[in-house]
Image 1 (cartoon, rainbow, N blue to C red):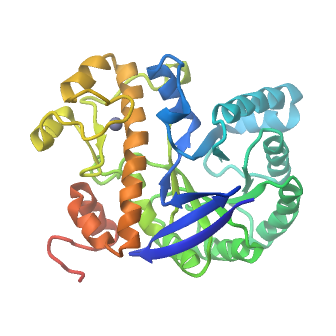
Image 2: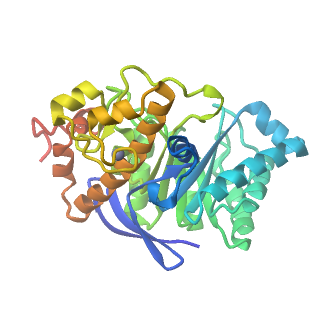
Image 3: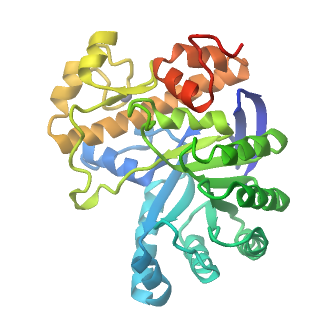
Length: 370
Ligand SMILES: [Zn+2]
């Protein structure tokens, strides 16, 4: 079982600590997911070690199409196969805190039966944070009933119940469902990302929740880019909304779905917190990569693009760098929160200014907010 303590908050962002079996994990933090780990295996030809991804928290995302989830509850062979896949992903994560995050097609109703079956599976897969999914269409009263039943089940196994809500719902219902979570006093809450501007009120409820409670909010399915420019790194924006750990939405590596990198390829850069092309990188920083993660170590900009040539390999290398580079940046960001210096942190990050102006109405150049 975990404990979570908030140490300080600044501009909606919180710095906290997760305690698990005598060790402390500092937040906000970037979470590694099983698909990103697969990219690492690809780059390293399978010879991946724990040091390569120093992330203490690991997420297994799994999207269930409507037909798959229906077979999952009815067909033993299908559920057995899926369970084996989740077990495999879980064991790959090693000793990290492992969270399972199922997702579903839009408007799909996660019934009590589906939720119960998913919990049953998670309990057998060495998962630490067991997802209890909300039925998007149900009332807060049914959510309360579901949590009552499910939390007991999970706690009997000495695991951590993880209520899971979608940010993209009606704000009055969302607020009531958050209150239900608060009443159940779980340490951990998982939310699935939805566009911030569209569901801004829900995000404000989330900020309010963490202002008054020591609750670890883990956000899944976060877009890689901010839609306003396809450059700003979205995962570095959501921590300003009370989120303590972030997992990025990524497609499965299998079946060649992820073969192509949009051209020209963009690379995450922690110095500006944007994704930039090699040309832009060269103009800003010359050949210096500004990172010593396992795909960058001993290389400069040309060395990186020459070494990882071919769109598939390049894509995997870009993912590996982003996973590690953003982890480092979260640690810098945490220091800014602790020093109540988030304002200067954002001002120094070129690609944070525009989303801040559009989303939070803060214009750092014109100083509309002091
Ligand atoms: Zn790197």
